[in-house]
Length: 390
Image (cartoon, rainbow, N blue to C red; front, side):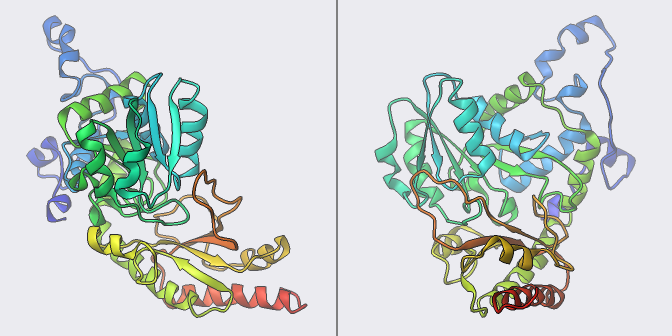
């Protein structure tokens, strides 16, 4: 983290600046026709056209790659773009893709609607499969897509067990690591080939940027990712790169507060009679806690809470009058969010538990104030159920 705090760019360091300057550019000019006609030979390393990045872009990519313990990083216009481009970089017609069943809904849509239309076979596997995934590998299996923990339901796959099966078979593994961030889990150290982050969330931390990141384990994978981004014309604003780089410098202190608040809220939730259980690998009662304890350095602020079934009217009573918690998509910013996790997450091979699932993001507010806001919501729900007004 010390190196990340002091990360910058060559021009910033030469000028004595703490932060890299924002280089906005489309056209890049050259001193000679030889330099111009040979520019594409430097596409992976230098600024040759604004679409492919500027010094501001490269400074952020270098900072993320260092945090990931990876070879190099390619930033993208969003986390969804990072997922789609990573998959596109390694799959073609006739290939088979294995996808963890807990995957983010947008990723599932891309796999089912776009990749299948391109001739890619897609199948899903139980997150608890571990090394038994070998039974689902086909001769044409080219990639395995993972997510840890599972989207909305927070299951913890055994990443090392899966990559130990994939790597000797030359199957590419890629993972959405947005929840933990590379501060708390570094997939490449566990055998993963591509670590993906929606930098929109914790890496930025301020709910004002859309940005994704794909970090490669080696030079060949990096070139494949870079090529996919440039062929699809994916480009990131240097202003957004600057903001995410600035957010990275406070990542550790922010995540400490997010985790502390999450644990305080979880302890409170577990005392409420309407709560069946909390989904969060950082607590001992969670089914994935042993894997989390073995592989992770911390937990963040996002978790699920499974409540007794609620009617639509009870949903309204519970959700519609929060004072501090906001109803909104995304997470990872400074603010606390609470949303219903329905319609229910899609599953192909792992059944969901019955009940009303909500997703909570513990922000940076004072934990006591957040608990007061939640207490009022449960009071409204109880009043409605007893025949009173919410």
